[in-house]
Length: 369
Ligand code: AGP
Image (cartoon, rainbow, N blue to C red; front, side):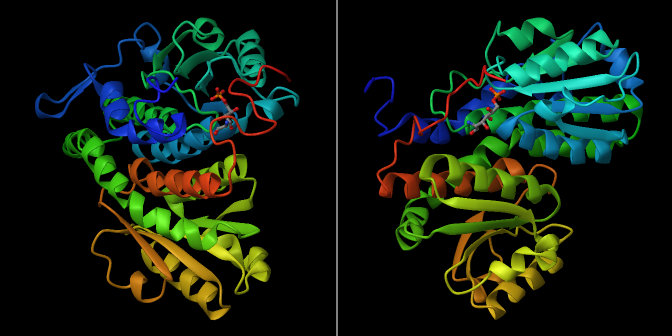
């Protein structure tokens, strides 16, 4: 086991640090920015169905559902297709409207999640075309879908999903880029810019990982907190949800993720000097708005940990702790901004003596309904 951990104390830490490579592996042979090459070999026969899609339904659970939320923003932005993101466990038990030819994208690291499998079966029985985004080759979901793309992140052992999440975002990003170009909703010049940007993500993730020792120090300050709030806007909203989920599942600290603008509709009542608030506040189209959300938290004496874009000079003046990540286009920022949150949950869990790789009550594949 020590050999398999490659010198890391836990599988989760190894998998966090593997991400520059796993994201690159996910793009290998599929994307080449200098020649404008982007091909997902697993999506062929049904590609024309995607081209003509009038809506996309994404079904998934947990972290994979968070990847689906990011994908919703991306597909709507680049491809101008309405997207619904559904918890597989809700979708399958209600009476959803699924029409012949509807497109369903099922996202699952394990490819064995019972609710996601059942949601696929339901959609298939109504004539939908199902694309799978799975990590485990030959898994049940991979076999049940019409077509799909593997995430190629390599085996993920830690129960808390890390590298599978960033690989899911990479695959979904590539799918949306291709589709946006084919549908003509993404200008060719923008398509090329985004290819270059996506190709540079492994290097940026590598840089984001350098925040590890700073995050360890910050973790020391907050390891005994009883609650955490995670706030983000736009593309960073699903990242807030993911950060909160990571902390909950491995450190057993109660954490909530929220869209920052929703804070004033309730969660703001929770803020006092005991409440750490993690802001994912990188420089994007909602930057100014999130700066005022940070001020609102500070005015109520909350403790702010802010994930910001490198070189930000405004937020560090307000936040108690600032963690810098490299700049990228806002659509791809979740690939980078999630890294410090994975590290934060990891270090806090280790400091609390929790079983990081196998947290209580959780299984890697949730095969029960
Ligand atoms: C992630 O950290 C969780 N352990 C969990 O939410 C997981 O993402 C969920 O069970 C879905 O699993 P899947 O991707 O294998 O379908």
